[in-house]
Image (cartoon, rainbow, N blue to C red; front, side):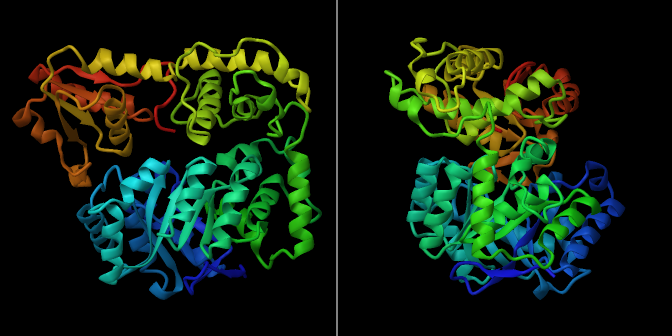
Length: 508
């Protein structure tokens, strides 16, 4: 059976392995039989001792809550702890959070949720938005008061300095963080800080989005005797950090479940194994060609440039990457997206422009303990930034060309998603309040509200007559364009796309 650990001071014990709901095959999400297969897979995990189900309304292409409902017909409600999640983009007010939770209860039939996450907090500014009067945190407290949820948690992809502020604010009983062999030096201290405050810690992305098992040989140094694969070593590494309660594994099928169960069935590390895994992980991260994050280059740089973050983002180029990423299938585009995702999301570094600030003095390379060709890699990184239009200057130019100077009074954004909310925040950051009214459209208007505004469906286009429709999604932009174009053409409404071929996503 899978061991259980206490989740901070909540009084709840969770299985070391938790079940994610984001990686079910798309083919299983198209009909009732497929959804039943997903639920049966989760039920099998529960029989092995997994008692945490990581659920959110948008997971499994919007079917996660329906899968949970089907799961609860197969297992007793009290045998599992279930999460619900609320994002400040779609739920910016206390009332929005309450509607989100109430809707989740209705769709899952769960009676209550064990955990409510304020979800995907990216920085300290977003934390302040959550905690403001009338904001999402007030709604979370009210949901707890009503008995709809039992514990308040937070999930974060914030850089370490902002993640520490999230921990220190004292508003949450637990935190969900991304932690793996590649992010150990950044996230490890945040885990330690959270544990010291009595918070429960859950881990997502223990396999680095699939990169670690796809680079079996490269990271094999992290394996200890008894580990059957690098993937198993990575799962056990994440669970070996003191303070970690639960490690999430996305389940796409029986094979994924069997591998995760093998890693944790009857396993619980002692101090000797914890130390051995940290030592092995340090060795694996110090392979030739990889930056160790020592920071000597930053100290030597006359401009104080973020060289360690640049080099650790460049790591992605040296790894075997998935054959599909963010909907991309061309190897060169996948490589650029992986590198820039690490830089922009992982380190919260959005380059000012595509022109490198590096003066090429070489002082960084002269002190590099790994003897990396740092100036050459910086030049290559900025070549990727230019090719992918992944700088603040590119964003400014793109938004200006699409939305400014055309006399638009109403702009329809499609779909009603966190990406759309982010795009509008970027617009306000770069230009101030828009001189147009944003309208939110979605093929599934049951989404309710976005940024406190109603979400409209395709049937509302003729009535509302926006001056243009902007497709904000990256992954689904072509599918959305094909679906929306026949709707807007007869109305004479221009159809615009935020992303062009060759771009990196704005939201990773």
